[in-house]
Image 1 (cartoon, rainbow over the protein chains, first blue to last red):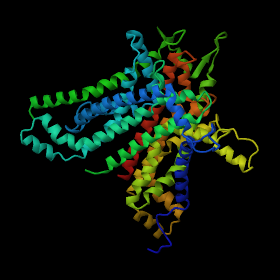
Image 2: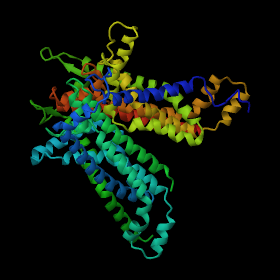
Image 3: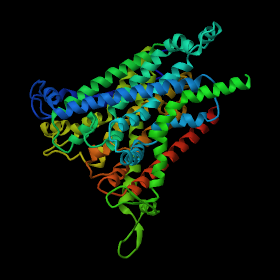
Image 4: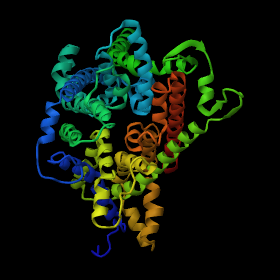
Length: 266
Length: 300
């Protein structure tokens, strides 16, 4: 075809697309850059400094919130991923069954129901339990996070299971492998990338949650995001930028990991 | 399969599902039912509820009754918040479409091995913390923020433009954080697009604009509908973005709901408002499923 006329080209589309990428990244890049600002401004550059990272690191509240965020994310990821693996095995291996649609809807509920509604529901329900039992520990946050992380862990695991060749499992069973042995020696090794991908998504989702945590937490149970939201009422210092940058770095590493894990096809 | 074997499969299936169902019933589906119960109770004086049946909460979603004259009027404050939420969510969907469609098209027309990298650039912001992205927008549009600083330095304006804490700020923020949700499904529908159809269009002397409107757009429509729903639904229930960028002055539904559990101390009203929001979302989802179904029938 003549070079002059590219049938795929649409006037202005490439420009808008480039504008889109700039708009997507410019605010984040500015935020990261100003986290290294020596001054207190988030707009006027006064030279490079680690000052805000040091001050965030020395802040007891930030330290406690970081530990809490990581503890919650760790347990929620573990619970959500374990449940997701078992549920994915049950929903992909034996064809469709009665109640499948309902279960699918339940697993995906956190994706469809607005977060604020779930947050309100959990606030009400957990308030009842807190009154009845007197227990106000981290369990509520962990179980709430497990529930909304479940669909994110479930999807890549299910996708992996569906794309898997069943003949290996059949062969193992023909060779008198017990179900557990077949799962551990044949299914699990193939499923591993899916599990890892699902766990990474769950971890990121848990670490980033604001709304549900804000409603479910008891006094003094701030995670990093809710701590940052609470700081808003005061003057915004680059300290928040420094915390944001650290969180961003974790997310980006996890997402890149997820991307390359799910891209390597079988 | 023998009956015994079938029973065994069924039992193992439910055993495998049990942990997931337990977590979900305890911390997702179950509590939703309690919200329904609460919406029919009487508010307690200091938050919480009294176990007395009442339909006041549902009544108060759209109406209010004067305390002294007992005159019933529409609750203007609530209705204006409903209207703002719906208006801003529709505008967000529109804005993300205007920017998202060309972007998705651009990516879909790149060489095959490059598309993944372009898509990764769209996905990374999507998986980064929503609160942080909202902060980033806030710092951009503050009075002392980057935009105002640049405009002031260039002498285009004499004093900073107030952008923060306006509806515009919320719209900008939501469009920014939900843009990837528009690009992803449109890209999915354009990715396998058969460009010989476009070629046929040009052979028949169609202009670029006509090809876009009559050939490309109709085939991308399922993606556009999916993207619009994916953007509209979280926008409608947005809480963080309007709180940070609206600064408590421009409330949206999510903030109105939160208010009932804080200063408002009206848990049943908060429950009824939550379920109203949920109902609107469900209607949008059902309309989407219908629209998607029709598209499939039409295109076989």
